[in-house]
Image 1 (spheres, rainbow, N blue to C red):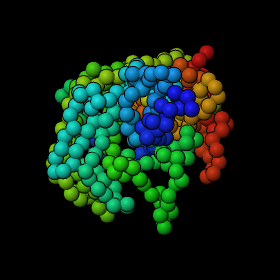
Image 2: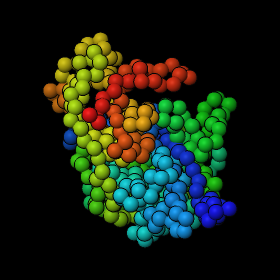
Image 3: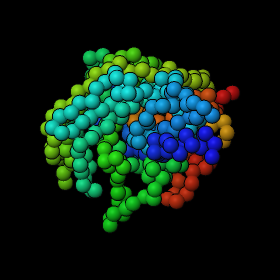
Image 4: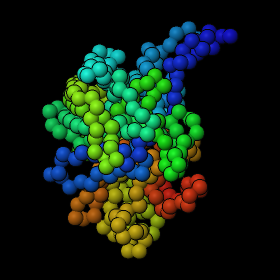
Length: 376
């Protein structure tokens, strides 16, 4: 056995993981900014994963690979083991608790910690570990109140406990840890909120206001209050009273790729004029002023963004999570969506827009999309 193999064996309990996506039915959405004309959307399965693996040399390990990635982040976002260290180094991934930027808070026997963040130009994703609170197999945990500010100003968010679900990059729901999906008697999916170590994870997605670099180096203040479970009528049954408060300065990555384009989406008359990809978000500027009647559903302004095609031919679909859309009277739309995948901005070949839906059991193919190249 080589030194590399010995190291892997000694640390295999730290290398857990695959992916997860919270279904939007479990998301709590809060929009505090109504003075601007925006629409906030959630996808059928919201947002995304990182597999945190340790990068190993023959003698030592990269300092950036020594962090313990949260199980929820490994479940929500998907990235190769070779990219994990670079995500830490560039500042996309950060670990406030390990860096002593935050302290764990214990109230009423429950300890909450800020374990990991993912921040790019437009979105910030925060994972909290909740220790000391037990729930039943069919119970859904929640905090009754959550308040989030950025440099003292309210910020729009959605939040939920990590439930163990993900998608396969082709629109199919899977278990984040790679196990088989479990269904109840009513064929509904059985969520898995409890981690193997008995802890829970609470995730918050913070929305941009449309400004590039919106979160970087700003102080976030989060208060979580009154922990409990949802009742039959979605009311919260509080079982652990208390407020868990945290404040620290966010790091982040400014990496993005912006491409001016002039692409008409099929026969719809809709024109895409600009595309931008950041590590956990996609942005597009779209002109609907010449949209042709009868080419789309009445309630659709333009074919929605669904994913990307990579240079190696990989197609990632249905990876769009929460997002915002600004529009004006002239038909201009600017859409910015969080993604359920960590994206290498240099590897994106094209943006994909939905052309047609698929039938149950069918795989998405390129015939289902309008493709807008951004690498020409």
